[in-house]
Length: 319
Image (cartoon, rainbow, N blue to C red; front, side):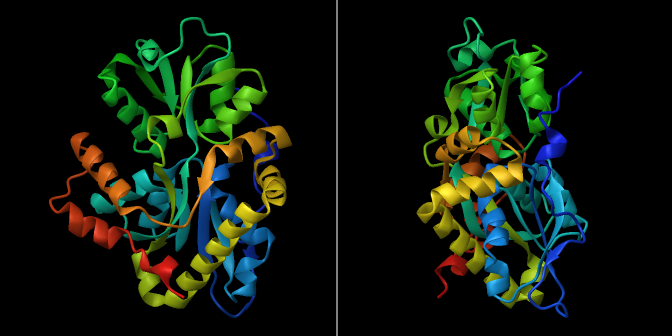
């Protein structure tokens, strides 16, 4: 049986129907983020510091999801206007025309890791993962991409690993009971495995691909067309929140603790593994696209045209 690491305690307090209202007569921006994902600290900070309200935009948390592809499915169903989501699943969904969204800001770079059991004998390199059961949060997630890219660079066949899909709250318990021998996840789960003395990092994502893009702030193309002023306000709140994280790290940690339900030591370690930024990286997205094409995850005949449409850097440079 897989153990949930304090799942109920970790669930955020905002669900569909709860909104942060500055103007009740206006329709709310339906926002989503990933459960307990410290990458999305800027969203939680914008809520806690009132940055949406300051910009006269109403935000409703319409979903707290367990993996990026689930968020893209919600976009496709017309249930979301904006979301904090992994760049890889967003790229795949847009390229495959299953959802129409635009990346209007970066959220973070780095901040994931491959974790093995703390006392695992002979587990020192990626090659040692061969024949082992390794959990990923979902196919097409940033973490799936990072693992595949790292193995590819080491000339290790992805098929030599036994890959299974587990949601991050289940991973630490599965590692502790030897149901899996390794997992790759976003923070704070790698840090929690370390502070619980259950696991150790085999490789941090910043070592596998320094400065790699991870999560983006995405907006529905239709929503951008209908409500550019609301998108602008949310992006400005996101920028203010990111700046707050940089200048008030201690208070940002407290916000992270509130939304993850995790202890201070874990959140401090987790935020230290993440770089919070708003600047979209075109060259890094190009590498995403090229690698995803090699995996046959996407078919994009004109990479340049796709990236110019998918990444809109104008929102964060606009004054």
